[in-house]
Image 1: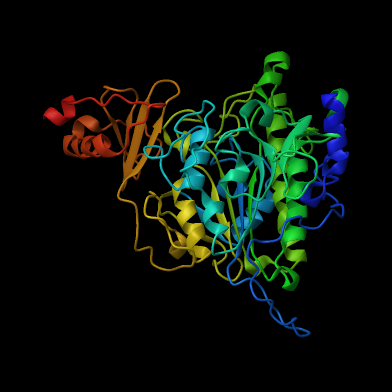
Image 2: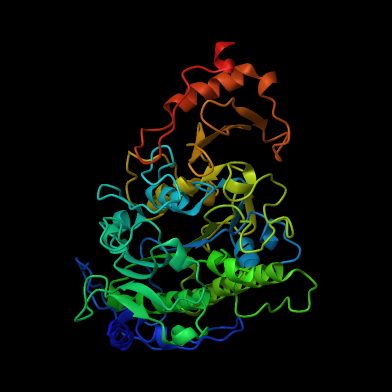
Length: 512
């Protein structure tokens, strides 16, 4: 009976995601046709005064930019052509970088996804954020995230698609309780990492006869063991529909939109890997079918190229609606590359020249791509070496939307850097902690970086300007630098019952 209810729901849906889930999607990463779906189902809480219709030839747009925040899953710093990748084809993301700014020293919020996404959306590093590890947890009622600010005076339409992992059904961290008026996706790791999902969670205001989440909705194309609807394609189709429906125009009072598009690629399907030995799940290894690479590597490359094509489709849709100059796009990854599902991150040098991968605090686990494009505002083909991190995204987007920055965050706005202005406000320290594989801490100040591999252990010290691969621990040669970091680490975090760290009272370095 439950299956029948879910099947019926898939036909009842209106709004962005209406007919989407019943479509068979092509196995090739080609442009995806967008079906004509319903109109927005819920009016804005407050409607601004309607302006006169535009005159012929008159260009109008929102006063603040549309914002698209795209997050890849386990994509390494070195997986894109614009970051030096030689084997994997990423022409559209390279084009995005050529049209805007590329960050060479941008850091994830954490080396694992849940804590990193929490830092990204709350503007707090893992010493202050609520979710600091990768086990299931929910944001609290008091935790405020990006769309909650944008939905207020800025009157943004807010849409979330894809991987959430910050609160499941019935918790305070449900996406629609955190400022997203439209939501389609996955709330936990296992569900998200199946790239042929049989259902998705959905919240769309105004749908009749269902609860606040609209239930779980069956994907017909993947029912009864079929594998026809690939998650990257499904999310891209929903994103294209969202842009089409919520693009600012006279009828919608030029209200801008915020689209949080959190892809699940190129994360491995670890459940599949346990059964088949290859968790790099993709419809086809095109265009790498002829390469004599291990199959997981062909599949990983195909996953990334398919993701790249999806970004190209979104760029094309913005151009079609003449939204390039009115839209700020940010593209990043949640953490460094993984070694899961049969994949070897060294094969493509996915972490670039850096030591470490997903799950540790060396540069390879933390340093991620960040590309920003805002046509007419960000100078094309620019590169910044200024260090920033995921928790800087919130204040940056609020600055772009002309929303006041909250005081209780750790992030600084890098909007001045994007616009080619002097970056007056910079970080004194960057901070991370990780609670899988033992409680670990890391911090960066200037060119110096420290890592504490376990509570009570001595700090490792690296000079990233001279030694970006973190191959020479120079702690014994720089006791004053180590002492400075020790003092910082004592006050860098607030107490967490869920993710505790026992701070040593004194270390050998601090006794010198």
